[in-house]
Image (cartoon, rainbow, N blue to C red):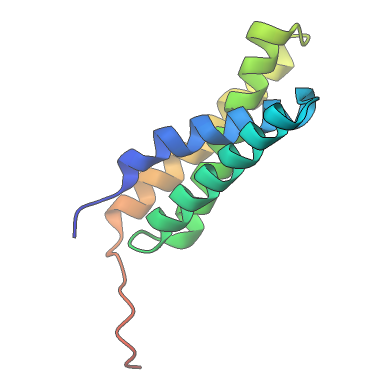
Length: 115
């Protein structure tokens, strides 16, 4: 079965989008867009977790979403940026990449129903 890691990019972008929407949505159309992004991001993560290690998918998904949200907040919304923020983002990214690489080395288990 083909790897679904490529779905992490759209899932992460949807995650960042709904986090921003939750903060800034004011009208029904904006809230509907936010709900669509929530549904898409969780749906893509769930789809990936069906064939990939669930804990790694979830950790990478949430880590990249958090990192992306912080970066969008800094780059476009005027949040303060300092050396500690950069260090923490790099630490998060290192952990996410490490988990992804580690999970690639492991044999992907399948549910066969036997013990």
